[in-house]
Image (tube, rainbow, N blue to C red; front, side, top):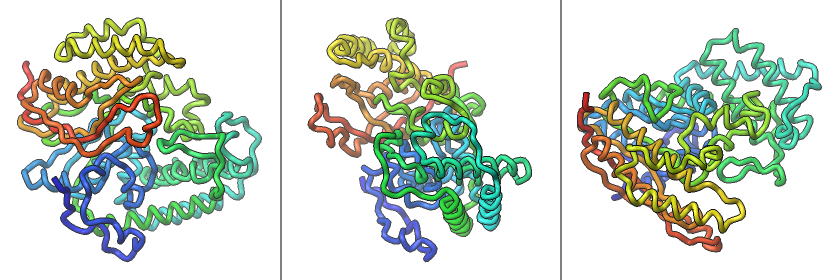
Length: 446
């Protein structure tokens, strides 16, 4: 299947650097955030745990032509589906358990605000920040390791100036300028960032942005993006809520005619740690261990950090009736992982993580059955996993859990190979990523 965008995404000379974007969106790129780094509004904050906005737009347009008007994303991250639903003219609702990402998505949804106000507000904030005296307050160690003293001082001055204005400005302007500050934290840092946003204090960067200059430039870029979308977008409406996909609390029964999302992969990626720098700067945490209470406790358990205190409960997790569709394969895989961990120095509790992950996802399917309209369509971008070289057929097991929850059918459409860049590692299990299509929700019992 070739995914073809119906129209060229950019034709405005305001974005000449984007004219080279391809007309066709290759399906294997649907699971990557890379294209979004050049797309207006989507590029406002770099969070790579997402998927292609161009692919989402095409999917929404196709399903809109089939009469589907209400879209749900229960793992909405920084709002890719919500933004594209608004652009396309659909009604959308997003749930996100990560509190910081909720703030980012909410700010991006203000793209309809008066664009001329943002650069003026940014200039006012920078002028205020320049006049503020230097502070000698104690800051988290991570910030000291990630910034040169003068740079950190300027960032703190910008934050203090923003705090003085937050109650004066309209909510949209306050949240947009907050996002400007959040978006420049990494360009202004003198240390490296891994591909998945982990901070690398031992690596340094050759070029570091000045906070005041970066703040002004980012606000201008965002204002240009707002003007562009305001000329191009249709009259859709989207809302972001902090919520748990395992319950979908607050979503009306049968509301979603289309669900487009990408749940966390069972690959031990710590989504909380990916935002540690930002959380430290904004005072949400002071140190790494604070992530557990501030973020991890809200998330799907897809990382061994989530389950460090649950190892002794692995068997009780596996015995939950919601996991009966995965018997006996799931317990067998977990038993292999438990034995395999003894051969590795880290002894990571992958067996507990996998058990907790599928129990959480079983609860997600139960919730989705309640909120998905009869005959609704669900599309998940998902990949399989192989912790310690033990393969976990994620898409198959998720499909079986969907059927057990009351959906009619599932099929998996593989799009691209994964684990191809690390052939020198200890295990070489071929992995893939693709689309899990689930159809035909039946009315919930009772």
